[in-house]
Length: 406
Ligand SMILES: Cc1ncc(COP(=O)(O)O)c(C=O)c1O
Image (tube, rainbow, N blue to C red; front, side):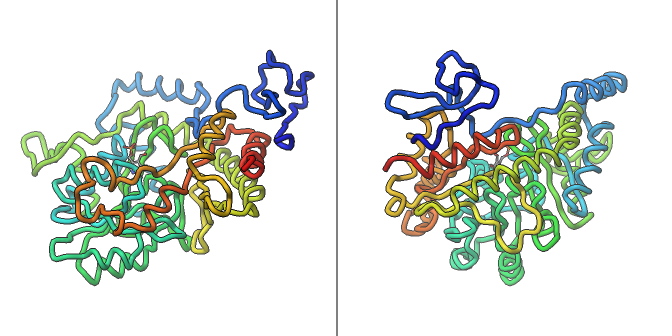
């Protein structure tokens, strides 16, 4: 792997001094090189501390810590504009956002969803009292295959819960058509889709409701947080009430609600993160370009595509697929090899949600029902992807994958 050797311009050791503290490649035995410190799959975007303290002083001055305060209001307005959606409600995390969406949509009976997602997606269905029904995914977009969705519809189906996985948009037109044809609610889990635009339209404009996650691992974050976007003012009012215990006035509770509020400290973090988002997006676009350039031509490696309908990428994840026969190593073997060289990738989304103890007995969880998802879960991995990753490291990681002995 001699061509993965990286030399830091200002380091006299040329990377071969074990005491060197630069995080660049060092010789290990027979010319195999490795990063001295682990390269994590992601790192939280941390705004400069003064951008936080300035807002903390504001919060302390106002003596208002939560319950839709000033920072909350500013952030909600800023994000409504940034995401280009008609209505937006901030929530305390993405999972509670999904639960609130499920409640206001009266999600009951069967909910058709994807197994190729984070655990929160089917868990939200289960928590609202409905039953997840897993349908297979499209082999290119890795999102719900509309044909599989249609085949899974029964008289008990009330809702489609589709995920824009890795920021790749679902087939929003086909799913809208299905929802209208069968009178179903259409909820999108947009946890990976912050900033994504399809045909110059913010992704939160599609379906009845779109849920976002602002977890620390996301591109835009509030440490923990989330939001719901919707098109109707009436739905927005229901969400606002539901996230605040469904309290209508001092003496009236309008129904069952929950505490889903995002507090002032979270909002302050979000406002500071928003200020540095453009730079972070630029850095990530550069890293994605490096990965695409080095890995685009490697036999047996498929890089995450930019779909033609995407007019603004989300840039939250960078995934690749490893086709064992053609590449010569399995995804699991590559994951383990990279780990030995201190490159920590994630086997996203493996195992499939349909294989979890709590869901594996569902009829829809049978692997025969989910052939594409089952294959993709064994092939897919997320690469380190965050703005602070130097270009040289991105080049090195991609070169390691290209040149891995096999
Ligand atoms: C697809 C998906 N849905 C939902 C969530 C839940 O979001 P949160 O962690 O903010 O609760 C996540 C979290 O990472 C996710 O990846």
